[in-house]
Length: 224
Image 1 (tube, one colour):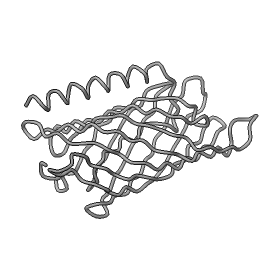
Image 2 (spheres, helix red, strand yellow):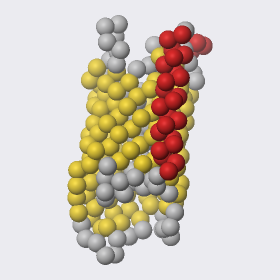
Image 3 (tube, helix red, strand yellow):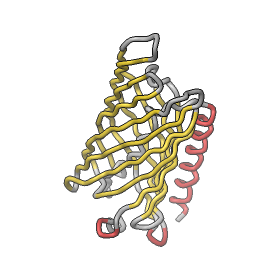
Image 4 (cartoon, helix red, strand yellow):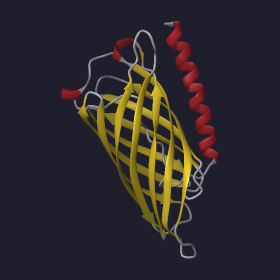
């Protein structure tokens, strides 16, 4: 009991720090937290809102291909401060379990990659990220669970149209998510994450998102 309370307190402190940083930053619609847990999904749907220089609304659909692999679809829209046009984005990806937590080692590790494009306000950006999500699930009382996770990744960013006065450009950037998933029950979870970007093409800015995840009852996994 004392162990998970200590872990929960540390995780909450880390998230508060992440939120403080994100609140001072200006988020870009094409850079948002991946909200990717370190475990494979059977099927789930996430609706999230990201804050920053405007508001981003994001929808994610994850679908299992096997017990160790799933694919993912992202889509959304952003209303950026200072822009008269909405930014639309869509992307997809795959994830593969590398390691599952056991009695001998506590970490779940998931390899995740994909591609996404955003367009609006005179700019078009393609991002191709690849990285790992690492974390551990702490079982709580009454079927609840807490999963803190980190998700570092590298991204190839290609800007085909960078505003009226700039041509195409590309770079490789490093990005980092720090998040937590609170499993309320087998079907419903609250997920929060701060995303920190090193991409100049994506604005080099940070963002913070809170999402609600639903897993259909027939596919909800038994408690770990």
